[in-house]
Length: 535
Ligand code: MSP
Image (cartoon, rainbow, N blue to C red; front, side):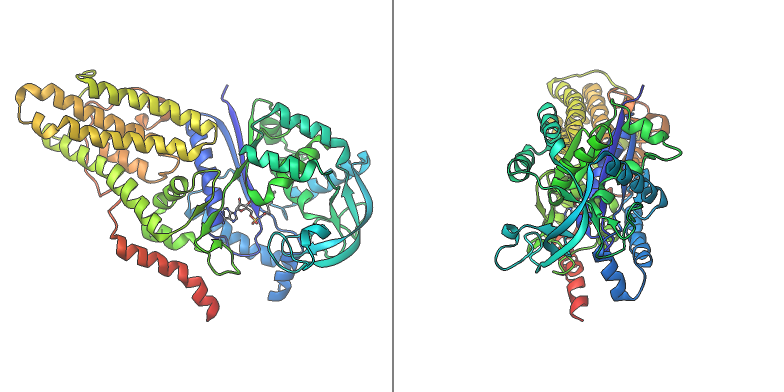
């Protein structure tokens, strides 16, 4: 039976258009999901939007439209971007979907009945932008939101609370028994030391000060406060407590299914403390992993609309192609660490890794096979010398490392291994000097062996890069003349499959960029929103 894998992105706030930071997180999840699917895992990949809350209500009011109209407009922009980025999500959950609303109401009722939720009143410093209450210490004497730096306001209102106390021991026990639950581990220590050890406050789960939310059936002047609404998307999207709950049974309820939530650091507390507690209340299993990725930033800090330092993915995709943008994200920001977007690095990645390394290997290999063998890839003769053997063994080792690293979500490292293999093959060309072998008829077998090895490396690299290269892997296969039945992952370990195929030279896979001109062009894309705002 196929192994199962369920991966989610955070559901994004559709308060403004998506920027490269949102695209980063979704692309990383897509690369992981495509990789698992390709390797035969039964995979479900979810993304969506988190549409309720005071901020959306205010944004809509400012535009003179209803919150529903507002989110309907912005959600289209998210969906369009995912199409342009070739995101292969299996579903898109909106928290305004009826399936979600109905289920959240049932979940709230269950928790209320069990006594996990109780009515009280809340008074605290509230940041509208972050939709969070903060303590006196956190806002300091200036009464500033510790997260976004905006002024906070003192609020008092009747509210329902989620009672955390009874679940703390089970939570700590879960952390102990599942050391990779929170990755990187530093995040776990932060959760334990900053939030759990000092004593966890109960979580406010309803609001009465605005009405753009899911109504509490038992007390209709309350709407469900945003984190109970938001986090449960991961199960409502699968059909939890709905008529057709087959996906929920198939993925969430199967203990063998690996469940991974990928999130940004800002929402770690909600995913690693409250979410497991909510699941405990509902008698459901917890996810295997919450992977906290880093931020893609600009030179002057975090991308944000208000700073006007965001960059859209569209002009990059239009100019350099979707594969290059996806590759940039995976390679430039080590998954789990922060990264800074700069035009210089973007151009450097395309030129060094894609044009000079992968593109060049393909170009040289196909040209040589045409020149020396009339375009037919030679059969495998085994390894005729030490460097042949070394290259063949590196192909095998790369596949093994690629799988292990990907399974451990060390995604950037996994793809680095593939690039290392390609670099090694370029070096192998220099070492084996096919142009010299071609001059000596006695070295024909050796020349054949070199071409066979090179074609195989390209085949392996094309296959392993497929989760990133949503269009270019097929271009690699086209140039190698690989038929459809060989374009499947199961064959990646079989050496010498390409003997007898006819290569077919195509366009340059990634044309080399004029660095100076392109750096300038990207800098203009980055400047555009600021100028618009100024105008
Ligand atoms: N709606 C909540 C999440 C609820 S999940 C149950 C939320 N939304 S958000 O729109 O603010 O987006 C959050 C996620 O977007 C972050 O956790 C992160 O994964 C991603 N990113 C937003 N800006 C980003 C960067 N600049 N860089 C990388 N990822 C970024 O919080």
